[in-house]
Length: 338
Length: 108
Image (cartoon, rainbow over all chains, first blue to last red; front, side, top):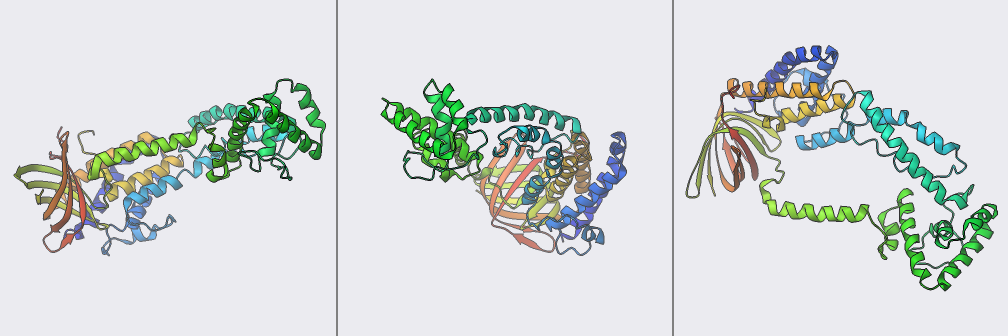
């Protein structure tokens, strides 16, 4: 009965580890309650992995410690994925709590209708060190970047001061490639950059109401079309900007894939596609050697020998995870045929 | 500490420990250095437990799909293995074996 010893052995390992790291916890000045929390959490996770199923011998300790409200899982692999995705929760909470610095600077600016900062969602990236100092540094690095991105946005939208960002020209008169609901807005931003003497125009724009702006945009578009080659250049800049804006607004890929047709996109999506291509190639070449199998045996070998296609091996000290249950062996003989 | 194999960390009990340590690190209760100490202790404890507390033997036959020996680590991918213990037997459709070279626990 290989399995009946599993719980006893695991009990021994947990107790042995906890006993022997007590000194380390003391040396690091970590409270003993944390150590007990570690033990409790460890036992709970092990119980939840159900690898010792059908082993009623395991005492109530494992059962009572269920407050971890992760959904039940079968494989330890999923368990690690699960916790690593849910674990960072505390850290981001702390960072958003102290993050209002950039947000506040946005709020005080006339244009309060800016979309959420693109950099704010970043902090959930697991910041390894728990100490508050490194986390703080991380945020400090973030902040200038956020402000920078912010200020560029503000400059670009200068002609738009005090207006809601995401209004769309309601009439169908503008029919440009890549036009979406942001088309009108982007035109507004890009025109002054496109033809040089826009400085005066920008000032004007601030005074216009919506109808006047729409008319102004249409006029500018017409001018752009009339110019030699201006049309093409115009389209490119606009779709690029529209794409970025779509991303900021959280719209899906299909939203700005229209603009992609004329090759405006540069960074994110192309990179992802390339990576996927490379990754799949590597996976293929590596074959099934590294394929994640649910069943795994971790052990040591005394001897591995082969005659023709017959393999014999003598293994020892193994932990086997087969069909979601753990088995242990002290010695094992294996015969394989290749 | 380093003379103990670390590959048992990938077992269920090892992964459970790593998860728990991860959570404590994320919540700021312990630092990674302490977590590494705990894992090193785990390497020792599991090695001792397996060598001195487990007595049962197993036999198994299987079709060998793939094998590799690299840096004294054998990796076998078996299909349709049958494991026989003293009292019961287990079958699976695929299993991967990772075997490090045997050594007495604690020996260099």
